[in-house]
Length: 190
Image (tube, rainbow, N blue to C red):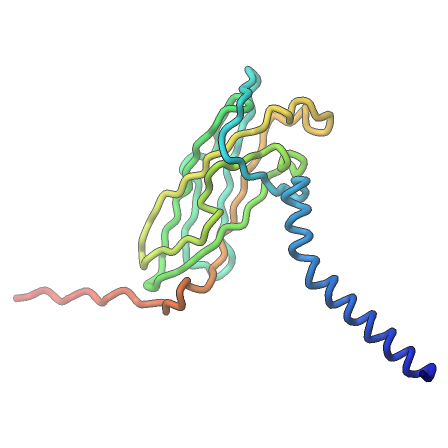
């Protein structure tokens, strides 16, 4: 095998390795964030905490929509004070302001980032895609708790408030449905 052939095979190997690494980066990063709470990624829990402390924490709620998303989106209440380990239930309101069916998915995080590892969601509208009919308004719940271990971690033991933030992005409609315009209002009958 000539020197040029060996160089060509090595370059092809490097290209294949880089392509595989790029393909694996997104699922690996997602797994890493869920496992460590990095970037404010929260945990998912099957049930509430077994331990509830007398110490309280304030949870703030933030809601945003991506540019071009034809929804209004807001928290029903801006803050909630809970005992650490206590299960909280908060609601967010979404309204489709357009004349077509719109699907959306919520991305989320918590701040400060280090609190993400201790913020556990039990149930959340962000786990599934949401589809709103033209001008439909809905309230969507999120059930959560702050793990009492947050008080035993020297990096988080002084956190007294956490902000839970969501941003809705428009996504393709499920099942290949087409966006439909709302039916035109009927003229009055004389």
